[in-house]
Every structure is written in structure tokens, then in C-alpha cells.
Length: 339
Ligand code: PMP
Image 1 (cartoon, helix red, strand yellow):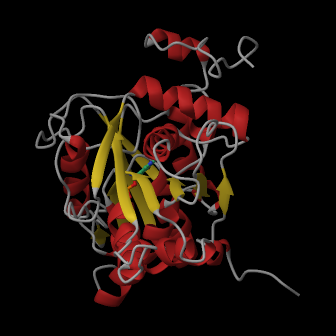
Image 2: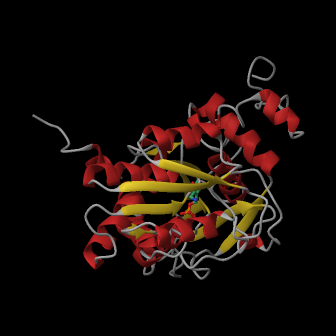
Image 3: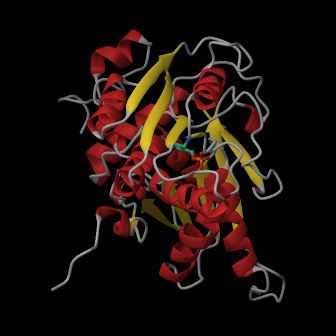
């Protein structure tokens, strides 16, 4: 018989899928790492498992303890999955810009959810950082994984995401592209891929390490913004978190909400990939890089989550129009219109 001991044992090992239509006119191969195929539906299952295991090892998380985390949903699902298996309670704090569907998913997994206002400074007592600190301190056995500073986040990507990409591309990828939120994905995966390719030589005998490209929303600090608001979820910051090592990306490119959402809709309609807005954002960044590359270049772009949590937003024409986004541009219409 072939079966997994539990759903948690199926975290990681996600496939690479070639992008075929959105890459029209591009000579390089662009491969998407499809992280929604993780059991909790996102890349965050990886860090959740590792953060909990490390906390058990260090004693920070004791039997019967409570996990308290500020999360936009995906980290919460991963933590809830692993916590369920191990018998921990979960309390998650989400800013109110996070879709209702995403919060309902957390509750469905048995977690408690506290909602805080988005439009407050990080040091305000009402911010999701502050509220989660307070709940963690007030709850007996409370432990806050803090994906923004926990080194187990980038470490999980160094141990799993990076090696998977290296192996599946036979060490031939030339560029790795990922959105930056906590920075854990780009830091851990990018660092592994650079380490693995450090001694790789091109035809001319010069070193050809993997080039690592971060992508963030226009306005976010990683690409030099001032922290001005944007709608894409899960990526961008107004502060530089410790999980992010700015020496890993060779460059960080900024993408507008409009471009990110249009590409997100194209990925569903043209590539059969129903993904979240940060995926569209990352692909816009990847294509910007890929368009100037030769045919032997291999660009891997990581797609963090599924589109299921955004059906009422990015995939909803009325919501898109209410923010002034064009739903009738070629390839972006949800129903009818463009082909
Ligand atoms: N996309 C989504 C939807 C996310 O939830 C996250 C995590 N915040 C990211 C991208 C960015 O990943 P990281 O935190 O590892 O930078």
C-alpha cells in the first residue's frame, strides 16, 4: 500500500510547469514552481512545519501550547495543519484587507481569527504586529513563530525549495524570480541556488551563478518605495524584516497592482493556473527579465498560492472596476471579451 502517514508529510516536492502563452515572443524557457499544490495550498506550509519543529526542539513551544501569529492567511493555514496534527491551539491576527474567504479558511481548519485595521502604522497598538504580541504574551503557553524574524523560515527554503528547483532543472536554471513579503522565500531559496551554482562556469570560462531577482509591489520598501499602500496581498513591506537578507537578490523590480492583477487573470485563463495576485506580480517581474534573455536561459518563477482566496477580488470584474482596474484589456476579461 502506498499512502502518507498524514497530510503534513506531503508538504514540498512541488512541480515546475512551463509557461507557454504569457511568454509569447520570449526566447528563454520560463518555468513556474507551483506552490499551491502544497497540502495547505501555499508555499507557507514549508515554513510552518519547520518553525514548529524548531520551536519544539528549543522548548519555546510546549505540549498543549498556543500558536499566535500575524498572518495574511497562508502561513496560518500551514501552521493550523501542522498544529492540528500535533495538538496545539492557534490564534491568528489578520489585517482587514485580507479577503473574508481567507479568514474563513483559517476558521475552517479550527483556528481562531482576530481582525485588525490595515491603515495603521506598524507600531500602533492596533496594528497586527502589536495585537499578536499582546495576545501571545497574555496567553499561557503562547508562542509567536514570527515569520518576519524566524530564521527557520529562510532555512526551510534553503533545505527544500532551493534543492528541489536545482534538481528539477538539472542545475541549469539561470534566473530565480520570487515575490518578497517576509523575504524568507527569496532569502532561503536564492541563497541555496547561489551556493549551488557558485562554481558554475559559462562557455567563456567566467562564473555563472544563478541570478536572483526579487519582485515587490510599487510603493514597497524592497524596491526603494516609501511604504505607500498597494492591494496585492502577501508581498511588500513598509519595514525591512530580519527574515530578508538584502544581499541575496541581485536586483528587486517593482510591479504595479494593475499589471500584477492583469497577469494573475491571464495565468488562470491562458495557462490553467488559478493563482493569487502575488503570483501574477512575480510573473510580470520574471517576464521583464526574460524578454532580454537568450533561448538557452532558464527562468524559474515561484508562484506562492492559489486563486481560490481571491475569487471575490482579482477574479471579480465588479471589484476590479471599483478600484479602476481595466478588466477589458486583452487577455484580462473574466467573461467574454478578449480571447
Ligand atoms: N505571496 C503570498 C500570497 C504570501 O502569502 C507570501 C508570504 N507573506 C508571499 C508571497 C511572500 O513570501 P515571503 O514571505 O517568503 O517573502
